[in-house]
Amino acid sequence: MRILLSIAFCLLSIIILATQWYGFGLFFSLVSYGLVLYQTFRTVGVNSVLFLFMVLFGMYGYSVPISVFFDADIGWHRVAKLRSWQKVDDSLFSFLISNQLALLATAILFLFFVKKRVMKIPVNATSKVNANYYRFALVAGILSSLSEGLNFLRAGGFGAISHGKAFYQGAVNDLAMNIPYEGFFYISIALFAQFFATVQSKTDKYLTYLPPFLVSIVFILFINLAIGERGTLLVAMVVFVLAYTIKRRITKVGFSYILLLSFVYVAFNVLTLLREKNIEYKGFSKFFASYDQKLYKLMNPANSEFGSPALNYRIFITKKEEDYRYKIGKTYTEITTAFIPRYVYPTKPIGIVFEFRDKYFAERKEMGSTAGTGFSSLMEAYMNFWYFGPFVVYLVFMFFLIYMESKRGRQKIFTDLLYLLLFNVFLIFSRSASQYILYTLFMYIGQILVVTFVYKALPKKVFNVLEINDAKR
Image 1: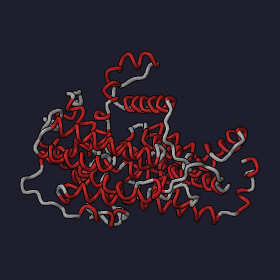
Image 2: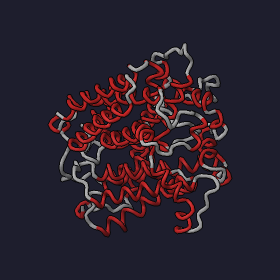
Image 3: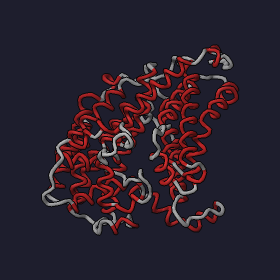
């Protein structure tokens, strides 16, 4: 009944928005989204990729429309790009309509597939994972550190880091045969967390197994803290929690968890603020006294990266040519050349993300070859198929996510790893193009296979020093 109501309110919101009645259109949009979110919570729990994606969908899709309705300050540098950024205009109506079409596709899938008797998600964690999970985790952690270590040295070491995040990541991206480490890192976190959850002895848990694992990933932690890359660390934390509770469905959330999440949200906003130029840290009290207003603004998701997809979409709608020709799926074929390095294919097309950046955000190009704008999957879908795009694209991608959600926690190592790594794929879904989303997905699959190959190729005596006592677990 909740999903049927959501579909009805979603259709109603689209009709109202099409007539440009903003207040009521936004209201029914939020009601339809709230019903889908609650159904997700009750069915698969908060510790699921599907629930977290729906939370992110709301933050990306509604933070800007809500802020505009309440006349919140979301201007900053964005008004220079779009004069009507803080106002209700045609581009904002278009963005909300596309967002609701994506929600409609999701709600229809929920109607048929997201049910407890269909999803068959485990309720209790009763069985223990194989001790090989720990050994796999160490192999993946070492591979991640070695990969980033080589990238670090070849990109210029500490000199490159001193120029900031965008420069360092751009330098790594421009390397011939650079080695992406993130997949190995997340794989190690996912495997370790599943093993860690089964260790009963606290002595073994924190003194025997944790230190070697931390050593295996210490270089990754150092690099990300040095350049202020909060995203990788946040994804790692979420993957750990999802993996640790993969055999449970959590549908009750205590106040302590809400408090912890609030603290993490504030902490990452503080890190975001510290990355800005002319921001100095001279002690906890002085920092908050000096920058309290800026921090309050960052608390609103519309003033962070969650507002970027809406900005991209609205700029495109406002500034696109009158005779714009829809790409009819062309951008979704860019994955065919994504794995070919530019030094092998010098005339390789730049892709829709950087084509859009160079046209509307030329200044970002100077920050490094990887500097983007927070692209929008809704915008890409619209670019290809008009308003049919958001509905069809979300129908396909969400079906895949729902299918993987139904297979979690069955002690199938490849399936569980792919499911857990999907969090990062769908984390970037709302602000990335299809090429990067599919590239990331295929890269993760390849890295899972690499970890498996390396583990099986290593002599077994390498792991003899690891005394993993199953009786204590």
